[in-house]
Image (tube, rainbow, N blue to C red):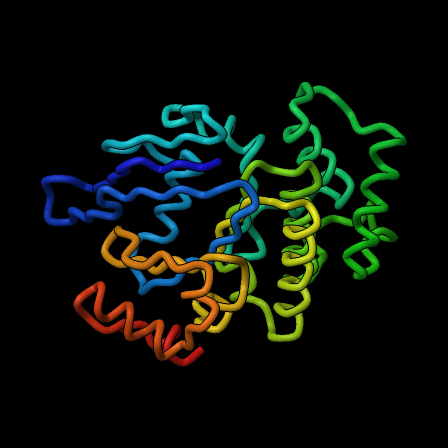
Amino acid sequence: MLDLKNISKTFNPNTIHEKRALENLSLHLDKGDFATIVGSNGAGKSTLFNAISGSFLLDKGSVILEGRDITFLQEHKRSAFIGRLFQDPLMGTAPHMSIEENLSVSYIRASGLSLFSRAGKKEKAYFREQLSLLDMGLENRMNHPVGLLSGGQRQALTLLMATMVTPKILLLDEHTAALDPGTAEKVLNLTKSIVAEREITCLMITHNMHQALELGNRTLMMDSGKIVLDLSGEEREHLTVDMLLKKFSEKAGKALDNDRILLS
């Protein structure tokens, strides 16, 4: 499904600001895999997502999706089949456009239709049906500007926009971290339901160690631009948070030093 082969990226090379963000990282995901990713700040988690999304050119390595080499494919072209949610609920939507207009743009792009296409009655009925599944009353506010929505409503809408046409892969970059606990739980439950129902291949960055072990079928831990742990199956099933931290310490040669993660 997804193959990252020895990808590397260094920012500001040969300067005092040089930062080696990814180093010979390789990863294989099978179709339907749901892998959580955890690591300290600067471990390379978001940079990994940027590499998959095509936000920059790699120094070396390749990105293969469903047998197709997309290493040099531009970001806007990848967005047609790669869904992504960010930590900031304000990203991913156009605030001055209506809910219907945001859904329409997303649907047309992901469907491979011409940018000059317009959503018809059939598509609008589908948008309303999908919005009703969020159970937030947004199906009755389709003409309202997205900028009037709460953070949780915008994140739920962005999730719907990213999955309305089932993406080949879904990237979730701490997409519930900025929400209040109740809203975060609702958005997370929506995420689990949509991913399971549509069998979407998914990578999710989280700072919550319990989520890292409970969600999906694989847990990845990153450090210094590398994946130091890749756990699945029976080994993952019986792990506690303390055991996971110990394994990380053994592999990385140091303890995890992110208070936000440790206190989650």
